[in-house]
Length: 317
Image (cartoon, rainbow, N blue to C red; front, side, top):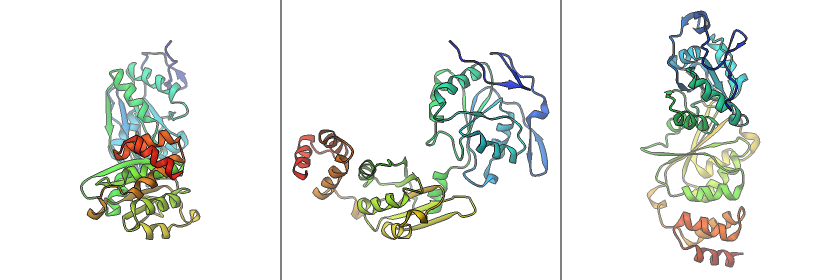
């Protein structure tokens, strides 16, 4: 059974295949004191990047796309309403987030199949990066729907460029686990990767994560803590990990959204794992999983035989 339609026009719920007869003025948008009329959009799913803090970072193409779209799907309607009001866009946003994606996603797909244009935004930055939009795009692709990227602000790229630690490659690791064992295991896995590492982190866990990074990556590895990017209290601090951890050694010292960037290892750091490294990895893994599973995961990460690692873990216990 197909889901009910979600698009409306002047309070009337439209049936499938019925296009809204939208007045031109309803597609207007505003930049400063000047008003503009958005050009019509072709039916498609538009992935629209929004500012990560400073609303002035919204692109002209992104503004026009939001003004022209039949439906604006967003993570939090209250957050998106602030952005839409800034640019005089009267379209009512439609909630699409991790808690309603299973129900809201099919409705958006139905709207797209009926010839509507849908603009997908997240609360901040580029959609699909650590948000539920990652489910909608594959569904649209599978249904033969065109997907159009509207690029713009990205906290990942902002942090990389401000940190001074990016050379020629980087690895985006997203959010680390809130459980220390799993977090440390992931850091062990990334320890010798020859690239700048980018992490999102909760301000409440940033200090603990930095302490784990000191132990696993080493105290002298260069790293950067970037918080409140593009906002009034923007802070970018780049130091050796031991000094960065000391700078932010209390959770009450860190406020706002945090991006951590860790520089690539120096040549002397790219050495085979020592027995001490293996023991540390096993200890971290066994905190979160059964010994046999921990040995298997350590084998996958290090290339050492699972049986050898299991015996080593039993000896450690």
